Length: 328
Image (cartoon, rainbow, N blue to C red; front, side):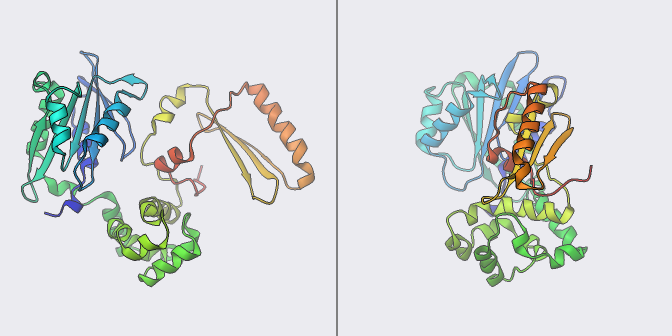
């Protein structure tokens, strides 16, 4: 069985979906980030992280994850569980000797296309941890074939059998992050339209030598490019998870600010959206109207008593493909 097709994060999601909701509370996360789970009765918080890399998880990486997840989603984490395909001996020794308190390492070895062998490394006090016992039981029963066909592949089969006219003809440069130089590389690989792109395996494409040589970030941005492409074809925003920045946003006094402009022109759109999706927009059709538009916009902010903060662009990119106007 090829390591390349064995994905740990979907396994974690599958495990937490089958937990008894009366006993465990799972906090939502995006597909490739850690999960936070709470033992409701014991008030114990767990962070579960996965490493999909085929390279060993070295002690330095494990320490960094341990430090990062000690407080997660504004909660103090009591037990951290890391699942990995390979773990370095140094990391295992530090964990088993209790140097990294409250840490559990789980190594996964596929025996065949259906079953996985696992090794658990932790201090003796954590051997009988209730969530760990549930996880090991789950891993011993899991059918790996259910993790071999990620959602992009199922969707690829759908558009391959029923491709839309738009997908067949849409130029690659209409996809965010695809420059002329990148489009040229893709064309050399036989990818000339969005349909061609979405028919390919993103893992294989990101590891292609021509893609790697194109520029420093092209290879790492392939998964995001696929999300943008699918979003354009389906003409809707694709929400792939909930970033911790947006936790409890519906019940709070939060506004999202959007300013549209070109580098060589003034701002031509001021937008403000509240937590339930109500939008206020001010358009500037003439550069001479910019001052009045800004004054009007500031008046709106003052009336609503908005406390302006900011959201990292990367947080938005992880959770949605924002280039498409959704149908409201």
